[in-house]
Picture 1 (cartoon, rainbow, N blue to C red):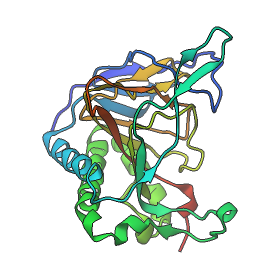
Picture 2: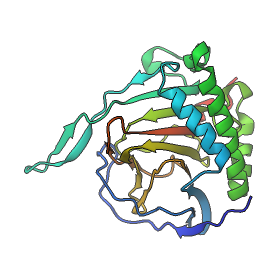
Picture 3: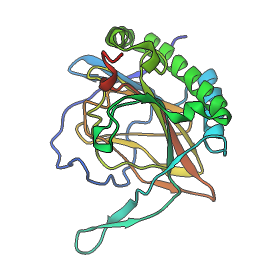
Length: 267
């Protein structure tokens, strides 16, 4: 398959955004299919509408996630609605928020767990359709990366030679998280494998926002329905803009595949 994609050269900008700052409502300025370059090297891409097979798998995964078939962790994050007259952020609970993790979960000594394990969701019978659709989606995403960013695909495959098969979710990632209506403050994925990329697939209905903002480059990438973003989340601070329903039951769900360095060389 041949894709016509715009080239966007990302240029570093000065900014005052810090980790932990809330991400405000920012209009997206990346809305077309494109490949991102930094210093002449391709680092990721954005596709506004995925290939049809990926759309069908994402639709199934999205439907299953929103059903009672899949266990979820309810989130308590708040979104902010600008600043008050004193310059302080005004927070509010705007939408229901939850997430589900698949694949490997790393050791968490601070929680009394010094070992890695597989997400407990894999043991839930009713979640199997969701898990299978996500695995198939991960494999399709890999093929898309191989076609559009062949050098990145080869690099990530090489990095993952050090990851035991039991800790892989697909071939290029260790884990997956599906975030329902979660608008994250600014952060950097420091636990990710340096040199690897994440995949963010979006399902969005009757809602606006949920766009990824990367202040280092002044880029806000449109998280429209059935879009896919491939990006090195370890490399830059980034945040997710507030998700605002435009009709009852409006939502934005992100299906994410990511590579954790905790599994490099782990038996």
